[in-house]
Image (cartoon, one colour):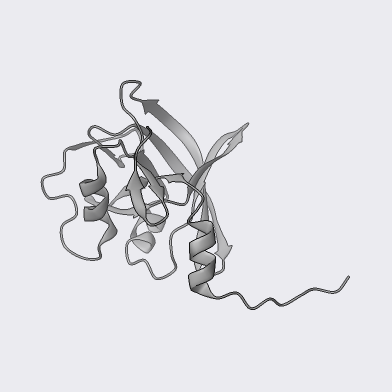
Length: 162
């Protein structure tokens, strides 16, 4: 079987895949006692047995190496009113946790206040995924807020359920 080597423009790829609606998370951990985190839209459930999730940070992320070395993380699934919080965690540098309420989870990773849900995990593996790393996490603890609604990302902007 012959493989093809397509030439796909990055802008076209982003435009087409932008039609896929996703939730928005903030991935957090504690590195030498300091809370660290970044916004991440590429997060998903992976396995029921054992319970696992995955996410994919960019290889250019300066926060991902700090999270990786801890061996654990929490995925904080954002609620519809947390767009500003997401923007805060989407930028490089600065104190992303300034004014942010959180508590440590079972793994010590920050669980952000007011989120839709959180999933506290141990890192099982991190594998190459092109310009990203695919991280597999074993779920240690999790909880959700039934009263909250999700923050969604669609075609380059935040949305909420109608």
